[in-house]
Length: 152
Image (cartoon, rainbow, N blue to C red; front, top):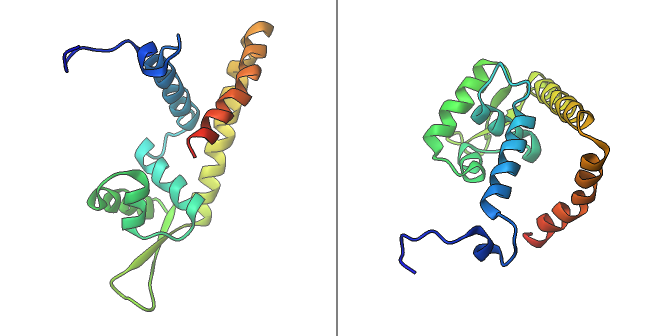
């Protein structure tokens, strides 16, 4: 097979599952849940805010590493979130060149709003499904959880 040839998704997984389609559906679903109420900040800003919330005090470099983006990009995002009152910058008493980024009370409250909105959106979508579809989704949860465990 040539380098430019596209293999079938089932060849990648060894199953009849369309891996690209599964990946795309999961990514789109996660994005939809995350952004169902995001109107005050961008998805990138939300990702950084959630990362700092999840991990505690972080430097710009640590956030960049976690988000797989360049530090200058993270600096711009953090500056916007600071201006919005969602993040704060604390100087390191031992190294004044280093600053730690933390989530403010407003940032934590906003994340709570986003999570509630995401749960509400997902619950309403599930409520619109038929019983067979909701049973199928429920049956897939342990399988998807095992997929996450395998990758850890």
